[in-house]
Length: 307
Image: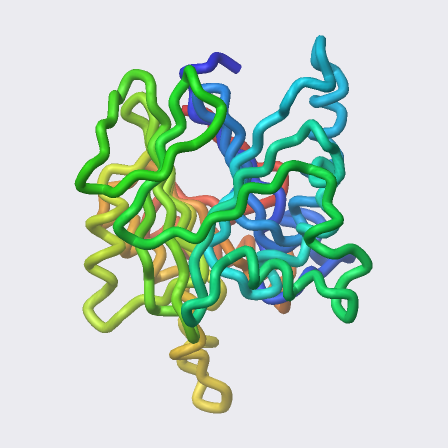
């Protein structure tokens, strides 16, 4: 892959909890994790159980380098810190290599910084390994909505800058923008937009459509090459009078298709699949989505895009 490309690969596409087994072989049963390569930078969004297989592959990549002991840089972004988005971190193999540098970014929660949240999730009563025991160089920083990340082609470390003060050179910088969506209980989530060389991918998991649709997300996603959008429910499940899902912080495929169409994106990937949805159900939801937005795909482990 050339350094000017924007490459995306899906390693985990489920929400809530992992669901291994014969009924989920086509789309996969691991929870949320997406790999993005841009300008020779490695960006990982969320650390559900999908990050475990990605980490095992990265070990081979790291070992194959001419100088395998030189620093290997990874930028890890958390949309939020619910368990299905962080549960793979203790089992992410590169986190145990002293020459790996993990630059980790995500939101605060109720004024608590990201490093404290991750540290608490890996306390001995919850995890066999504590955060402080990871051998990699960890740089953990909480972000706010008025900031963005710039990854320059001549610099390994990402820079955190204020949106209003950012100096971006489109030909040389990878830019990671963020928008806070408050449509997911109880603290909301970050929606990420990664841009390079005029190409862009938007990652919008754990978000729910509003009455009249999410105008902020539509504007934020304008003309993206790829929109990864939560689509946990079908419309019948969402409004099921016996067990309605409205207010759970997740979308239907109809909501995802509307955002994709209104934002004029080139491709939509349905994401954060309900763990109760087997391969047959997801194939049906994919087909129904294509009736609304033809260039749609149900997210699956191993699915790749290059722009």
